[in-house]
Image 1 (cartoon, one colour):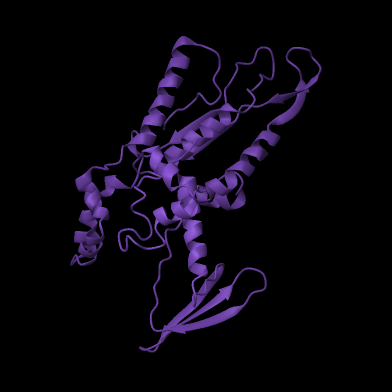
Image 2 (image 1 turned 180 degrees about the vertical axis):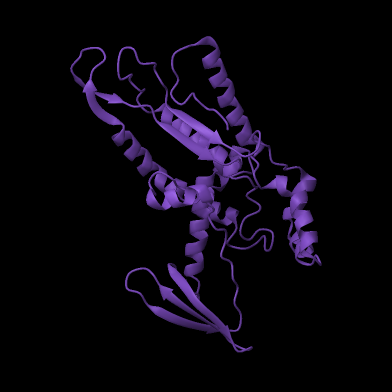
Length: 302
């Protein structure tokens, strides 16, 4: 299932600041001989895989610039300043640990977001990292996890038809916690993956058949669409950054955040929500007419 970003390719790393920059998404497409093909798609929205590849391309391009040194896998130990020079002490955590001190006139800190796991699950996530994961590592780990699940649910027991030993499958049940874009995309992805799993086999002739299932656990009553109207999208304009920064109180900034919260937080892109709705309709129809069992058809929302 192809996933797409929730923003136009024009809002890339450089376009709004410098349209002629060699770091734009269009430059990336041109260099990879995909510009004409992308135009023929007729959409401003790139796929997540392609946009991720663009970001990797840009990072590698920066590292090749003369006088630019890029280091990954380092932990900052301290930051000091004497008013003229800033000193940053870091420790390399890859290979042999190396302590480095870098000095300069300017320092930009951009740590990004921090994965948040509900407190009730955080301890279990540490003890059983293969059973509870955050969406920030989902793309890197889901293939291995699904392989482990598929391997783990295979076991020997008397066949329900021949009475001899056979390989049967237990029903798989997975929960997705969250009501935002990432949760919705993970929900659809897991549903697609489970549909390719072997159907579960009852442990006996009298067992009630059970399907593989996905539970979406959300705080709100339902998934909410994001507001991507032109006027609401102005909050992401460069000028809005200065406006927000120059607000004279924490209360004023909180009020603005509440006003525009439905553009990005705990909401789902309408296109993604439409796909989830199609799944819901399909599941309803399957239940309604009691047709053949559809793996992954159990999709309750709590």
